[in-house]
Length: 157
Image (cartoon, rainbow, N blue to C red; front, side, top):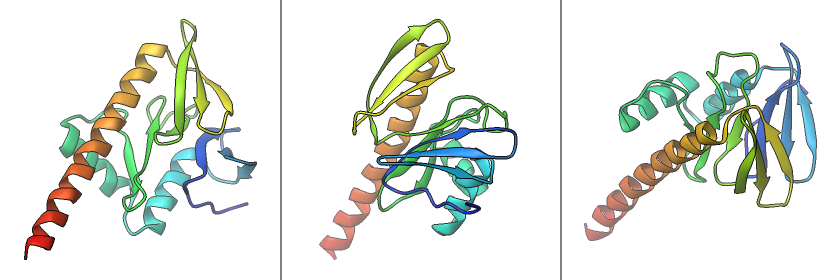
């Protein structure tokens, strides 16, 4: 598969090798002939933006510039966050809204349990993973609150 759009069922996007990714969904996995960052960028473009634009927006909202969570699609709140620098070949992207829980495996590994019961071990410390979840949650919350304010203003007109 050459193209893949991130959707509600996308749990994670993992590097398979330097040029390919494994996309983990609720019911199946796909091999995609793109790097994880390229899938994120393609999906942002598919939904009318770009990775670069979403990154600038997230940076302004969070007042940060490193390992930023990305709002891939805003009507369904598809927020994904990287486990390392997105430019790294070993960067995995995780869906915020599909996480049920996560816990420490060892010093540099964290196990994620997704809402459908699937488990995934990622090479990131628990503290770093927790920080990424908090940043992604903050981004999602701020954007949701801004939308609610706009909706209230529109309804009041």
